[in-house]
Image 1: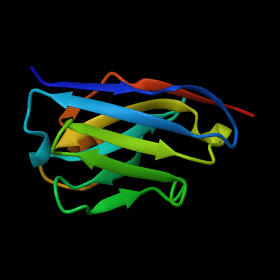
Image 2: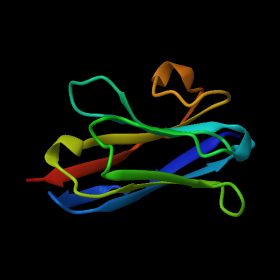
Image 3: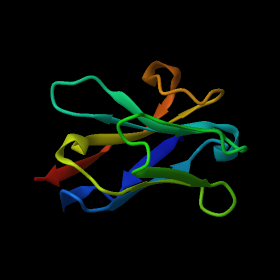
Length: 124
């Protein structure tokens, strides 16, 4: 059974930090590109950051570049991480991890496997 489970969300003050994790099972993690997406109330789901399956190719949206860092552990834990620093209220939303077989793209429609999401709230 394919499973992606996000953890690490919660509430933080503006300027704070948070680390999200996505634990994957049920498919070959090292064969899939991975991504983090977020959705704020009333807005479309947007790509935050993506990473290739094995060569480190990555993408960051302009709104998070320099503040967020995505990493993955293919060897031991089948887990992807998103370190978020200097958080602002605009970072508030439900954060989803997702997997796609081929490409490092911030387009949600390209992703076939999704987690249920974790809420991140940044208070001003």
